[in-house]
Image (cartoon, rainbow, N blue to C red):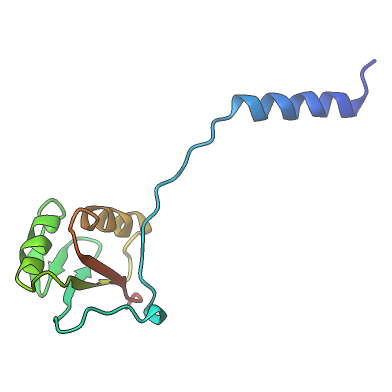
Length: 117
């Protein structure tokens, strides 16, 4: 008869060797206390609601978001642009991650997520 600890060890070994470890992608965010700011430029404001996106009060689709933000940030020059993202109540975390993933394509863009409200 095999002892119980041997069976548990074999099961543990089996599950450790049969499982896969994946590396999740990271989304970089600026915290409000970090003090990172872009001097001399007006920030862009992105309002994220469950059914629509609006950039500075103008509706924009998720597919056109990176292009629109890139065009608006090109007007500010080479010093970079601050984008304030304000998620409304009811926005899922996956929706916020989708927006942040699209914004990652824009160079010299500093994204700051505001509290929901």
